[in-house]
Length: 205
Image (cartoon, rainbow, N blue to C red):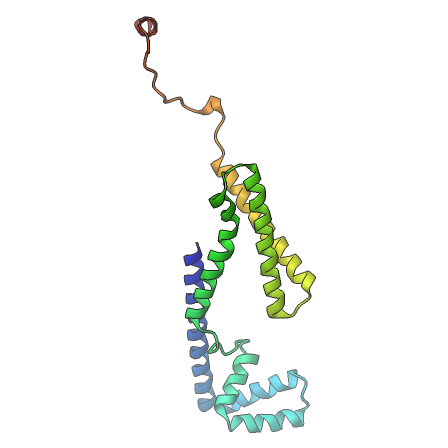
């Protein structure tokens, strides 16, 4: 599972890079072949962003003389795409893989160290809660959002996902009722009396 998520993150980031470069090359070509239309689009975007007509026209004149900068601005405001060059697909894929391995192993540690009983199950729940709190703190440190919100959302979402996974595992792994199971264990008589009894039953059937 961790390798699948890591490879998925790698391919996703690579696809973002390829799509951005393709769109940006098309935008540069349109600036060269159809400058009037691109100038009109840029001016409209600047007006929508709050500039007045005079300032929008002045900024447009400057950017038209710098096609690369104009293409970057159009990519952001026309297509809503940011330059992904700072995102390394390999690093993001490895980071995702390691994160899944580390945080995914936490609930399993009690079962690796202790016998599989209810006490171990409760320890696994506590360990999972601690891992979710740690993940929430990492999110808070990275985003600077409210601490309670970061930790609370992370714990809530993680707990919900864990409950769903536990429920599916319990349903799939539950044993059927005794009456619905087929008894396949063979019986071999151990004494002469048992042998005679089994033979008698076999002869009647």
